[in-house]
Image 1 (cartoon, rainbow, N blue to C red):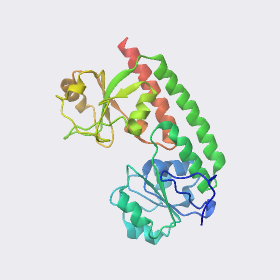
Image 2 (cartoon, rainbow, N blue to C red):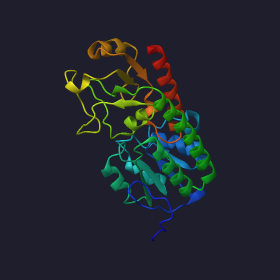
Image 3 (spheres, rainbow, N blue to C red):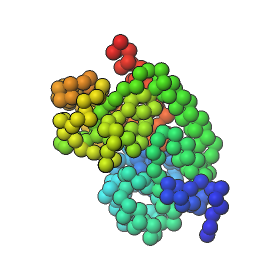
Image 4 (cartoon, one colour):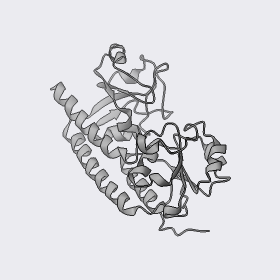
Length: 273
């Protein structure tokens, strides 16, 4: 069946049947699992990954189908979903292709920047008949973006190293959602150019010379206070822990994440002056 072009498409340009409250949804993307709950769709969630932890109480009854990478296809098949939601960065393409053999709608997501959440909200609103909730969330996102951009415009731009892993040390390229989110508040990640989305590096790399701050994310590696002194000594720059959900979780958490980043940026700028 060919669906009209007025219907929102997913990240691969596919248009999916909108089953509204008759949909049975499996989400393999933690941030989108939370988004679906915030859109009032908890009762239609029939499967999730073990990393889908928000909102904790609401998800206790929703069966787990493995992780984001090691998906249990047999479990999903038994749940008979009408829609499975996947993400380009978080779920391997072979998994999505295997799901397409028995799931009517494999919905591919790939937000590249905070503003892309508008399209994500609209897509979920269309598929699952929750447009008013999606529109309310869009309004909240627009307000948070306005606040974050005002902070970014009002303070001098800073070059930051955003750490996501240790042994090997890894950071993010400017092609990632994380980097785009940080740029909203005037934090610009290094390296400026990278051949990988999540490059590894050593501390002798020449592009580290100009960094002004080091941000240690709490995910996927769980950086803690004990790592701050180690990293500050290696980089000889101020180092700070940062909640990884603020920068890497899209969906509804992007609203709170942008506001938290704006607050942190203001606080660190004040501490520096």
